[in-house]
Picture (tube, rainbow, N blue to C red):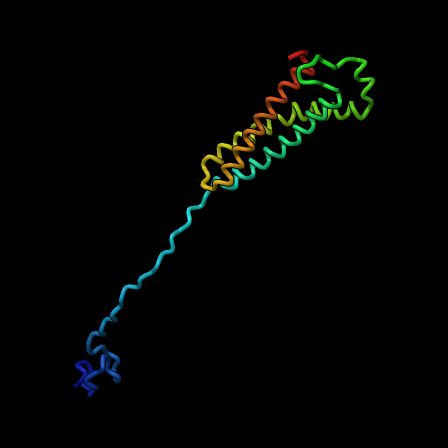
Length: 166
């Protein structure tokens, strides 16, 4: 076979002229088989798992702190749940400085932590309902119930100590 551009002799199998570099015939297109890519099933990310867990744990811790101070305040003052109000001048003198400090912390826990523990319990419960993890659902329910119980106790103790008989 001869090159049609320069006239030199080339091999019959040649696709390009070695003398002038011209294309003699079309290159065969490579046979490409489609590659099968196995897709691993993607795990659905549970976006409510971490917030539900964190908020539930925070609610349990805050409720525990609040409950400890409220119960400590009740025991420091000798308050019975359905007794009479005990905040009087004689009671303060009998308590001493440690009792007064503990009472102040109890009031702080009652007034300061109650909204936070209740709110984190409720929000943690809402996130916990949407998660797929059963353990976190149960944890959020426990945190919610504990936060509500402590909030109700705090309201009764507040009413008992500051307002009078319930």
